[in-house]
Amino acid sequence: MNKLLEKLVPGGFSLALLLLCGVGTASYLSIQRLTEEKRWVFHTHQVIEAIDHTHISLSNAEGARSSYILTKNTVYRKVYQGEKQKVYEVLKVIRQLSSDNPSQQRRLDTLEPLIAQKFSLLEQSIDLVGQASLDKSTQIAIADRSIEIREQLDAMHNEEKTLLQRRIATTDDLFRQVLVVVGLGYVLSFLLLIVVYLLLQKQIRLNQALSQEAIRLEQQAAKAKLADILETITDAFVALDRNSCCTYINQRAGQIFNYHPADLIGKNIWQVFPEAVEYQFYHTYFQALAEQQVIQMQEFYPPFERWFEYCMYPSPEGVSVFFQDITRQKFAEIALEENERRYRSLVVATSQAVWIADTKGMPKDFSSWIALTGQSDAQIEGWGWLNAIHPEDRELSELLWTQALKTKNLYFSEHRLRVADGSYRFFAAHAVPVLDANDKIQEWVGTHTDITEQQIALRDRNLAQLALQKANEELEIKVQVRTAELQKLNEELKRSNQELEQFAYVASHDLQEPLRAVTGYTQLLENEYQDRLDESAQEYFGYIIDGAKRMQQLIQDLLVYSRVGTRGQEFVLVDCNTALNLALNNLHVAIAQSKAIITHEPLPKLYADKTQMVQLFQNLIGNAIKFCC
Image 1 (cartoon, one colour):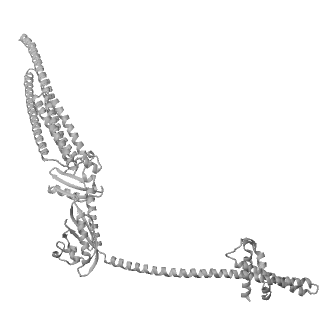
Image 2: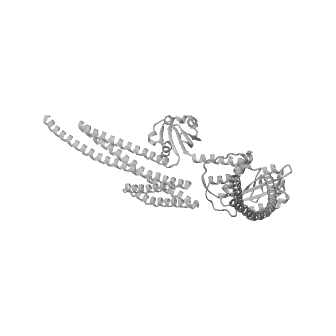
Image 3: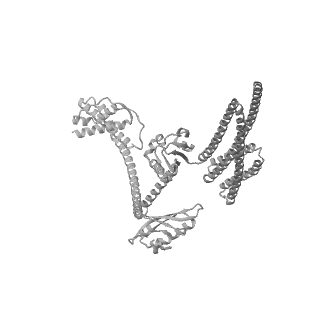
């Protein structure tokens, strides 16, 4: 027994070792096959993910093309080109990954021309947009290509899913084989079971990791697809949970909030923007959350100084908010409303009647005209409104209106208009054509403004101008007559001055001869009878001679004075003291008789006419003596 046991033990041990080796070898081979199958499972997931990316990129390209058609923004065309490039890159990846699958290769051979045709049609539609001639046939062709591409992609996706299920089933079979081998090995050796068990546990963890990785990749693909869609739209987007915490924010919203989107994830929106609770958006948000109804609204947000348009989509998980900046649009609407109010106020303030005529010039809206003229609707039909214009002005007004209709030019006319009380008043009529994009008249807008007061003022001003013109003409005649009279008087005065000057010259010349005789004979008497005369007689002779000399000087000065203005002498340096003494000598007798006392300060020397300076002093002192006595 012992020997048998001894034989059995080594045999059993050897058998156990063989079994262990066999189990180990089988387990190793099975694990290698299992690992290879898992690699193929992962490979299949990559193919599925690439097919999904193809779907996403094609959708994004179509979305960018639609956005470009709607907005003409070149940014979307760049997005379209980028997504197109992604599609071709992903197709290359799929072809590389499915190189061992002939059926998938054949589908790719069919799919690639379809995608090329679709992109050709998309680019053709984009080019046609620039020409404003997008046709339905192109749209139908694009839709057909999209359906065929989707069918091919779905077929590839389904085949990969089928392949994935088959490979997972193969993996499961291999896994079961490993369990059987390990179970047999466990009977022979506990240690072998432990080893196999550890290997199996390791493989299980690897399997779970691969499954979780596949799930994670699918979730990431779904999130990436949604993120790509939300990032390509022009609206800002914020997703909030029921606690008002941010779960997703696209880049456009981050730009408006002036935050990086990642910085707001998980934060309560009302804590980040506490001032928002004071505005209507806060209450509307909770209303949408409570009533689970889509709500749209517009509101001005003072902290950002912008107008926003909100669209809230509630769900059990929270609220998704799409919003966009409409500040420019809103300000334009406000400015348009203000301009309209100003226009209406201006029309009311400056016009008595505002009317609208059709393209043929016939009445379209003459309500204010009827109120002004008192005509009825029947009376203004056709050209009946002309009857309110004064008969003398009617023909010209009709002619000007007809010309404006033909030439599409502005209409202007001034005429007398019979108002509701039957009186005629002056009105200025203006009308402008309203043209469409093709320069065709849609209607005429006109006004009638009362200018009676201006016409009366203009008439009065014209009358005043005529009267003033007549008065100016009469005054001009009187000025001419008076000028002739003055010229005649001037000629007579000139002749008289010439005669007076000639007389003074002759008189002064004739008066000097007797004075020379008196002076000469007096000097002869003084010389011959000097011995016989006493002192008093000699003094009297001196007075006679001196007086005669002064008289002669006065006559000479009179002659010079008569020549002033026609025969003026050049100025010389004159001592005013000397001129004053000569004047005092000439006034010697008057000073002695009036017992006047003449005093003076030292006088300067001046450039003047000596005779005129002596005459000046003599006249001043003579007048002083005359008026003080």
